[in-house]
Every structure is written in C-alpha cells, then in structure tokens.
Length: 495
Image 1 (cartoon, helix red, strand yellow):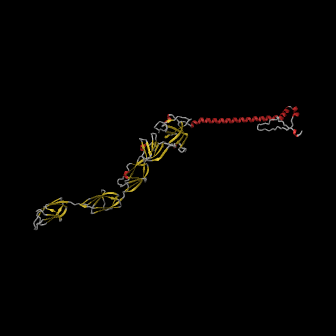
Image 2 (cartoon, one colour; image 1 turned 90 degrees about the vertical axis):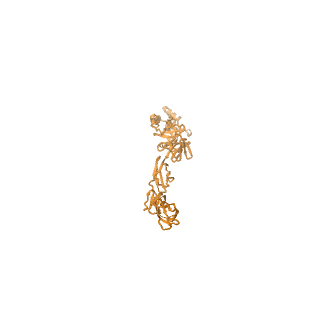
C-alpha cells in the first residue's frame, strides 16, 4: 500500500483534562465493537488504533463524582457561615441598639429633675419622629445636666426642651467641632433635630456680637438698648448674665463693660463682663487744691468724689495738693461696693514764718495756739490766722499764706490812745487856752485831750500868763482858773 492510501493510526491516550474525557471517533467505536465480538476481532481490527480498557473509564467517572461531592460540601459550608454572621448582626442590633439610642425620659418625675431656669413659658417636648428632621433658629436660654438644652424658638416664640446625645454634631460658627460644655446660655444657634433630639447644632453665622462694649444705655420703657450710635430692641426673652446669676438691666451704667449678642436687630443676650463700684476719700479737710488722678487718664477735683462710679478691679490712684506731698496707692474696687481712701495721714508741706513786729515784748497766737517765738515757726502750706498783742497797743489780727520755704510777715502795732474831755473856764472869761503850746480855744471851751501829762496855758491881755501841769486819766476833766492882773500871782482856785 502506498503512502497516500495509508489510513492514519488513531490512538486513545489515557490522559485526563480536568474532568474532560476524550470521545472516540468512528475508528474507536469500531474497535469497541470488535472487542465485544472476539470471534471477529482479528478480521475487523483497524491497524494502529489502541483500545481503551473499560476499567480505566470507570475510574475516571468515580473521580468525577468525588470532585462534585467536595464542591457541594464547600458551597454548603460557605452558605452556612454567611447565614450565621448575618444572624449574629441582627441579634446584636436588637439587643444593644436601644441602649445606644436611649430615648429621653419624658415622665413627670424625670422632667422635674431638669433645670428650670426658663420661667417665661413652660418648656414643650417636641413630638418624636425618627423618619424626619426639622430646623429652627433660636437662643439657648439655659443648659441643663445630662445634655439638656432649653432653647427659645425665634419663629414660634416657644421655649423648647432638646437633648444632645453622642450622635449629635456640634459646631461653632466656623464649622469647628465643639463639645457640649462649650455651649453657654445666650448663644444664638441653628439646629436640626429629630423629635426632641438634636442631630446638628451650629452657632449661628447670622448672629452678631459686641464682645466687650461700654457706654451702653438701656431704656426699659421703650425696651431699647443703645450702643454708641446703634439702637436695638429687646423683649422679655432676653438672656442676661452677671457673675453666675441673672442681671438687672436697670443696674447697667455707661461705665460698665458688657457683651451683647443680637440677631435681626434684636438683642438676645446681654452679659456683664465688668461692673462698677464706687470710690470715696476721707480726711481731706486740710488739703488745699486737691486733685485725684486714676489710671493716668481720670483727673478730677478731690471735692468731686461723692459716690464716684468706677469700673470694678484694681486701680492706680494718685492724690496731689498744694500743701501736701503726693501719694500713690493701689485701690481695689469691688462690684457694687465703695472703696474708701483715707488721706488724713498725708504729709503736709511746711515752710518757715519769719515774723517782724515794730514793737518788742509782744505775743503771737497762730491758728488759735500760742506760738513759741524763741524757735523757728514752721507751718504747713496753706492759709493760717495770726494775732499779735502787746499791752497798751491795739492787737493785730490777720491771715497769711505759707507757700514756700521762707515766708516773711511784717506786723505794725498801733498804740492805744485814750482821750479825756477837758472843760476849761476862767475868771474873767475870754482867756486863750493852750495845751502843750497848741491853741485849743477861748474860755469857756472844751477839747478832747489824750490821756497823760500835759501843760495847760491861760493867756489874756492885761493878765498874767498862767501855766498849769495837767494829768489826764479820767474821761472828763473840768478846770476853772481865776486870772489876775499883771502882777505876780498864783491862781487862787483850781477846780
């Protein structure tokens, strides 16, 4: 047989390809038929074809069945594990979820334990709703224990009670996370809530504030608050705060420093940062031209400090005067109280009085006390009184000022002059009368003559001149002289 007519030899290979078995063609089937009929095997066998034994075919089928069983077992185990995990998750959620999202106790006993700072209207519990959320803007009226907030709703005008839990999102106006302790009464907030539980709270970006303002005036009749040139309204729901308690709006003075928060031109919070006290001074009677300087920017006359209002805190006070050495001192002023500064121990400035009197052996009384003229006279700056006396002289009384180290003072004493009414007559009348050679009249005459010793002279033409030594020491002194003609004579009668 030539090469072209040769039939190809078909071999059945005993190989397995992952469960796929070679399927015999026509020649293989022919060989199988010869195997079943041994008598004809020799004449029908096709040369070059190897017959596959039946025993090997059964082993392949057994392996296939074993692999299939293993695959089914694996699927069963995986499905069982998945179902078990899902069941555990469901059980955990049913047992522990109520504990994590415990609803607030709204019983009468539980509500009685909540803070009761909001007294304007009774707090209302929002209806619970887990499916929907709502929003509102308001002011925090008070902060309670256990994450409770009392909020006044701007839109409804109601005071509402909310709860903050571990799922509530809290932020400041800059979207920074905050904690519950940072929420204070008077904060203006925007909240998203479900039922009575807050889901999100953020400090309102629409609210404005004056963090530390003075010169604030409040009109309680018009319910207006004026800060500089800005005028705001307020109502009974305003939140006030002063050192741990509510603030009386009537107690606010322009000098006080306050914090103001407002929304839509309405003030919702007013807190007192620094209140005022009073300052007074005692023992300042002897201070001349006293001035007070406080913190280098307040200067007032010492006499103007009658219940003077001043900001609470520590102040540096300087007191000056024309007649005292300046003093400085720290003074602590407490809110609503009077801080008094005693000036009685201020050291007076002193100068020397140099007294000159036109007479010797005098006495001096200064400011009501006898002065020791044997020592330098040292006196405090200011005004003083003096009286200089000497027997037989009129006393000198006056005032003088001590303004420097040496202060001269000159005093002129005037002698006391007493007069006696001298009545003079003569026989005959018409005589000229001279006292100490000074003409005083013609008899009968009278004149006021100083006390003392004088010479009285009578002159009349045709009569002798009469000189008479006269001692005057009485208020009235009458004298009558009988004149004689021009012959030596002595007065006959002197009355």
